[in-house]
Length: 127
Figure (tube, rainbow, N blue to C red):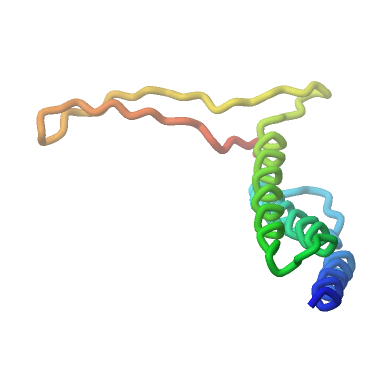
């Protein structure tokens, strides 16, 4: 079983190193980056977990290393993509753009209550 797990982690490493190519583009879609970064983080984390698992004494009992690595990679990738989305470059200066929360009072509904709605501008772009 030991050699099987090592062979599987080597095959996975080879597959990810060969298939992990990103084409160069002049313009990048920010929403695509927000979805791609956690995915790549999860794949990288599971690869690291598989590598650590390959050097453990009992590989079958330590399969959760891959799950912990994937979960950590997804969280790190999501934090990176959110941080990347909040930073805006304007005129050579880096600005942090946080969403603005705007309270709004709507008309009275059928229950006789006046709802207060909080809105946030999440997506912003220049056209």
